[in-house]
Image (cartoon, rainbow, N blue to C red; front, side, top):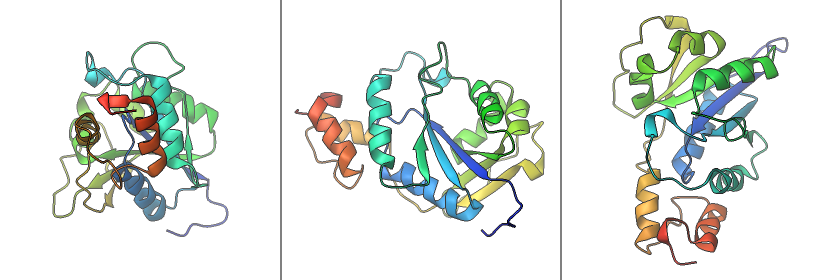
Length: 204
């Protein structure tokens, strides 16, 4: 997507547990960058996802390290530790407010999958989130867009064409736990980090 020279810079915000980050995450971010004309995509590992309370997960330090390893080599991708440095649950509205202040004058886009968008109306202060950042929703090929949440204007939502990659972090963890290869499911640097530290019960 081409923009006028005077248009504001566009920043994509991609939050997640990233336990571990996989090639599906990278593909979604790259599709968003290309389709929306984003100048940069900021990956934001969550410290304590409110919707995953009680779930066992790798330490924030490991997840940040893996995410940094995953995006290394792509100058348009970066990692923010804004949530892992903050105490308490990782509410998206707090993150978006803080990033909007930090990147004043830039146009913010919050990247998410269709499942997250379908539940967006249940998030804390969804209208406030959409006020600070436009929503970029990745749809699976052949699927219909979920109903727009109440309080979110139509012009604040854009749907992305996303390649169909049936990869999930939980499947990667299960394969690692079973001693099976995770090559090509995650970047090589992430696979090395998993093996080196024996994450998910993998052999170190």
